[in-house]
Length: 415
Image (cartoon, rainbow, N blue to C red):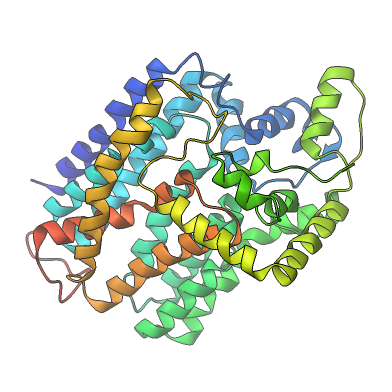
């Protein structure tokens, strides 16, 4: 099979099941599954303010998904089919990149299989067509892996990796130190320090406009001012709340807490009153509380880290109390269908680690360990893991091929 036909096959495999889900969910997509990026996008197009209230800019979330939605809404309007088809296109791009990664690592046929395994994960088939900011983490992650795995990079490619890793931070602020991790890996692979240093430097350049904007318009240099979410994942009530099957949104708030930016948006929508929020002061206050918790309750934090690891890697989808679809047919998929799919993937990925060459093994483990460590700092849930489950699919295909790889990313004459 030619490379072009293989990529077309993978694109169709990714698109068709998602389009079916999209048609099924068209009535609920922008009604039951809306998150704050959608609100920010609508407010920006209505008033020119990236915030929840006209004239009150906010830095309460990582911005990339909001920008993505702004572009779609501005070009084609806010409809289930506009956002839905755009997100299906992102999923198709992810599958194509995974296929290319598998082709360069094992073979074209293995690339097809890896892409299909990754794109047909039941949770992703559902999640990718609903409003969720993690969908952009998928193609960005594959692009970073694809570049880093080449080992010795030229300055130009290292610069490209730096920009992409900076965009990754704009999509997911928990990746803020990942460009440094990639640079260390490249140095170990033999990339010159002049090239490797470009990764964190260009990542910083990529995020700088957003950080400077926050200083000018919000009042502080920050990737996000939503330290309250970090605090909700790091306090004495977090463990028992999560152990009860709830999510960090259900962790009890501080008594008399000030309104959040989202709260002021609700107030404005209901009454027309504008309430100013000092997001920077709130960020500082909640951050201090988090560090105090870590310092004074190390044992509790260790319990939270262990709990996060279990929640991230639990093959069952987290059945958070009160979430959408609870008690319906989706519970069967989350409790039974997803584990049937994911458990063999886990086992094959573990086997695959023994068949890949050391550089590819280390890079795979860096991605896997880093996403787990994110949960140690914040909290763990299925949707934080699945964005990089294509790493497991790649390793699984290597296990299925049972072919030790001596020279990864070298094309054969037939490819």
